[in-house]
Amino acid sequence: MILTDVIIIGAGIAAHSVACRLCDRGKKVIILTKSNKHDCNSTLAQGGISVALREDDSYMSHYEDTLSAGCGLNDKEATMTLVKEAPGIIREFIESGMNFDKNADGSLSFGREAAHKLARVIHAGGDRTGLKVMEQLYKNLGDRAEIRENEPVIDLIVKDGEAVGVITRDKDGNFNTYCAPYIVLAAGGIGNLFPGTSNDATITGDSIALAYRSGAELKNLEFIQFHPTLLTINGKNFGLISEAVRGDGGILVNEKGERIMEGVHPLKDLAPRDVVSRAVYSHTQKGENIYLDISGISGFRSRFPNVSEICESNGVDIDKNLIPVAPGAHFHMGGVKALPTGETTLPGLYAVGEAACTNVHGANRLASNSLLEGLVFGRLTADNIADSDRHMRTAQYTMPTVKMNVPLPSKKDIAKVMMKCVGIVRTEKSLLEGIEYFESFMPDKKGFVSINPMLCTDEELEIYNMLTAGWLIAKAAYNRKESFGAHYMENRLN
Ligand code: SIN
Image (cartoon, rainbow, N blue to C red; front, top):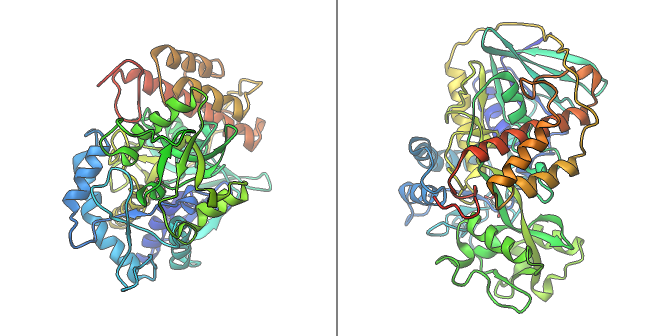
């Protein structure tokens, strides 16, 4: 049994933000990740970080935009905490060495993204913000925390209603037990539950499945953000085309060159993401091709080096100024119910970043609020842990006797069902069909309970987590009767 002060599951921006601060405060931290530490959504993030740092901006304005994109369903207190804490924490991050892009006069360069009243998004390396932020966090953390790669967490260990540890399987096939008074779940969202996604291939709903099996409460699982512009060729997607492209003047057009957002929303191409995604989707469903016209953007390659590389490596000539796009799963607003300081409903378990639902995003996340959430709530969670005095309790994992229902579907099968039944446009019938599909793989009447990992491969355990998350999402969507933001029920308004 391995004992430590804090176990962090996941290795993206939220995990590293928690780890850096806890190490500053003298805690012993182990980070567990099922792949290598670079495989996460954070390194892929293009857009940037929204923060009220301009003289003519204010956290109140950022707050209003966040609420308005979230359809007002956001938790107001948590949202206020996020926007108010943001400027100070970002300034400190800059002081730690982080280099955000600057104008010729040395001032910070602010980009515009959808549903923001003004340009308030800071970025780094053009559209390589996530990578640059992670590189800085790796530097700040150094070797102060132990990072165990290729070691998936199979289950949390719960004793007398408290999370006390985790069970993992390492790359040599050994089962390892870790115990700590604090367990932080920061393993991201659910992108690969859908066929087209901007997410890293490792993101398979593990956070939700782990939390569900441990008895922690989940929240708002029905709210899944589809990004309107993934590079899409012959129905296959090849990565994100940042919203900052539309912020800098990119326009969505059909094959005839007509603007598709004209008359759909007053903000046109910069309308909230759920609105733009549905508009693009309605065209692609009719068999039309939709493009991002970038002819109005000068110096495209230097402002968007990452997007340019994604396009060119997939045979799209950006000098022709038309990038073929379609929506894809991008961000989960729902997750493990948590406070901005990380506490979940299960004592000893904390959740942060996309894994968590602090409800700052409501029904639709405002662009570039997710890296921000990882940094700000990561910091608050770490401080909360460092200031508390939970005691170490140890327990061994009891190997479950329940076996998986085989044969399991493939990841592709699950993604197809999710898109059809729980996708951009949903109906009561489609949701019931989704629930029925998932329940056919349920190994036990009690639900998707813990199963014997000795009888499964890591891939099968991942698929089991996807089935668990898919089922929970479909049920949550079925239970929310009205349309709100990213949860869109055909013919039902809110
Ligand atoms: C993007 O660059 O479009 C994504 C940014 C975000 O999801 O906030």
